Image 1 (tube, rainbow, N blue to C red):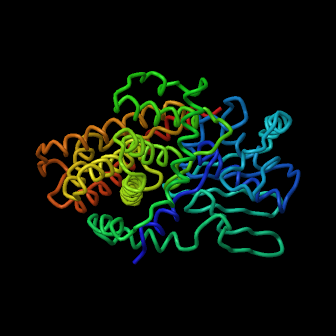
Image 2 (cartoon, rainbow, N blue to C red):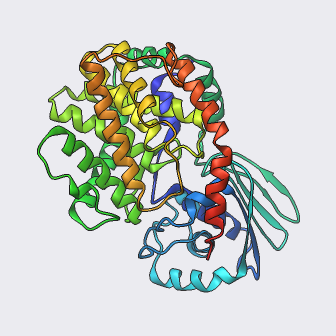
Image 3 (cartoon, rainbow, N blue to C red):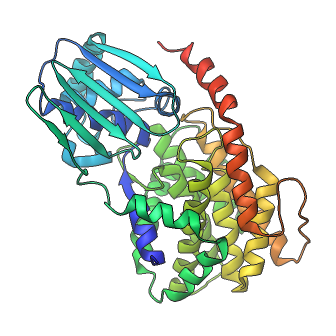
Length: 407
């Protein structure tokens, strides 16, 4: 059995900008170590990765975007030791060189839901699989190197397999066994700092700034969504990502933290509720998939927020589970049509649904086992997995629409 701390720490890490362009750039940075100034590069990525890398602004580029551009920036200027912060040192000269270089990159898109990136040049091949920063193998004309990237916890796969076998109730037992939740403090601090950037400058769609009230709901949405506005703008400051997504980290962490601070709970109690929100988000994401047709930033994180806030107020897992059930009934099936600045709208949706669901549960409103909802919440989440699988064709249609727009 793993601890809550072990599970959470295996699934969080800082990431600059959207993680899919960063993953593509990181692959390029590794290729550069073996092949420099390649005359031609064959780049292959899977459909869902393309969906989330195509239109989202790349950090430090002035809102420029594109799969080939992301790879070229990583190949020409990226530092592989930066991991998902690979865009950290991009400058104007690098952008100019990368924009010229994209004509040397041939892009192929293959079917698949799991993360997959392959770059090939002059007999060398670099493959990224399963996780955004997991370089699974490097092949040259002389040798084949199979290894675990330094930026990945070797136990992630085992942790995830274990999580999918346990019941939802086990998450509460994991939380109750932890006594000190300082390990989530850094994640809160990083994402709150990103929020301040969004609040104090023009970022993305500026949705967070639209919520100007002094009530707790307005503050939750404003602070949370401002962090997403900044992230999707591509500001040069990382988000603390969760399950491979910065928006998941933002939307699972900040609403619970803001609620706890506004209600004057003790810091360790707030961090405990934040940790529960993160656990719930991780758990649900493993069932619906890291990359899927369902928007995890709205749905999975919304479930986490609901469960975290309800547990903070009630210290009762049944109330918390009821809150999660409300989100399942409210926004299951919200589609992901690719990473972009408008993702902040879906972060807003997750924060709103999660907060309201927690309030409904705390008020004692009933939950009925209709639709995909079961009396056992573990089975409800397993049903979500079936729905996500069935939406594969929906995902395919979204990707086809986007493929036809590639420029």
